[in-house]
Amino acid sequence: MTEKDYTVEGRQFRTGSDYARALRDKKIIDALRSRIDMADRAALEKLNKDLQEAKYPFLTILGEDFKEEVEEALRRTDSPPGKQKRGKKPKSIGMQGKKTFGAAADGKKKAGSRASTGTKQGSPEMDAFVQEELKRREKRRKLTILLCSVAAAGCLGYFGVYSWFNYRTASNYDKLSELKGSTPIVEQVIPAQPSGPLYTLDETPEPKEVLDEYKNLLIKYKKLIGWLTFDDKTIGGESGFPVMQTSDNEYYLTHNMNQEYDKNGTIFMDTGCDVVKPSTNYIVYGHHMKSGKMFGKLDLYEDQEYCEEHPYIWFDTIYEKGTYEVMYVFRSRVYNESEIVFKYYQFIDANSQQEFDSYMEEMASMSLYDTGVTAEYGDQLLTLSTCDYQEKNGRFVVVAKKIKE
Image (cartoon, rainbow, N blue to C red; front, side, top):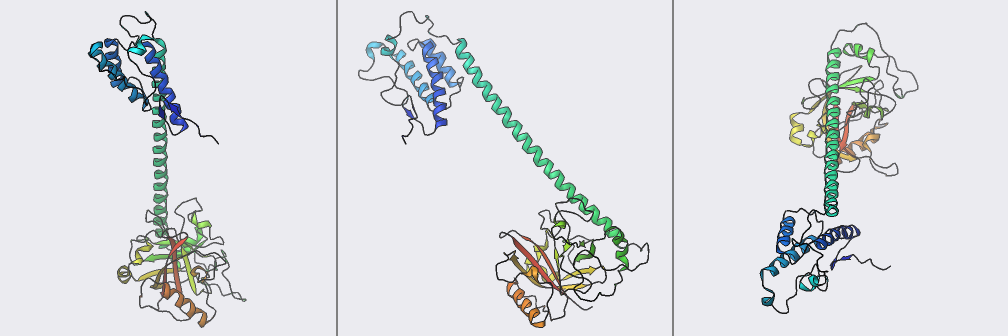
């Protein structure tokens, strides 16, 4: 394939767009050449001034070449014809061998083709061309301002929505916290929540008595399964987090406890966990929000000193209270189904001591530090999981053991 020749006035241009700009500059230059007497000093001075003030919007190097040509023509008008250096040629535009202006060029012009002033700065064609170019520039400027304004409005709108979600979440949690401690409206025994596969035994377990502080909440929030608070109120604030559970592990990633869309989501328990039996391990998920909401500050436990200062986590199911001590802190990720590797998010029940011990060994080997806390088969565990952005599909995990008070 033959390479295209992008040459204008002896200048080589690399791309088609640069070539088009050069042709546009050449059109302006040719128009100026056609109406300027290059031997007329007054006309050259006027043109030189216009060029220095950027009256003509050149887009390529051709404009600079033309400025140099005009300056050279001015210098020639300062010297008498007989004193010009022999052999010196007037400056060309771009490259040697291209068009030049001087006595030879002037001699080719027809006599009387120029007025004594040598300039027609007010020619309608040239003025119209310049005005059209200025209009195009003004349109581009206005379009740029418009696009920037739209982008700024979008950013402000996003920030406003983001702030509203955060405010609504905080307000909802405050109201829930107040309702949590209120006197039960009615005395009742509420059976286990039918939100997921809670019953893993063949026989139906006996109904459990719901704790008084959750009875009023359960009237409105049927999917409530527990409440989570931390030793350090940096995570969850004073009120902590209500914990929900449903048969769809995706639902509470984008909804709050009022079933409203909320990018903060809600803290929720894995659908496979059972608070009635109970399961060996309660797995609780939450978003790692940059605002610090939800589990946005859970990675504070990456620091061993922080963990030693704040070792306790309180997790109440709607049936019983629980105090947990942090045991393991590690990073992991969501694996493909085909990968044969320990997947902490699949550890819900241990059917034997051997299986339980194997899980403990896996998590101990992954832990960022040794807390000195261990667990035995039959202990109740709590696993908190959130996103970790150090790798794709990364997870930050805190595992704690329920302690006997």
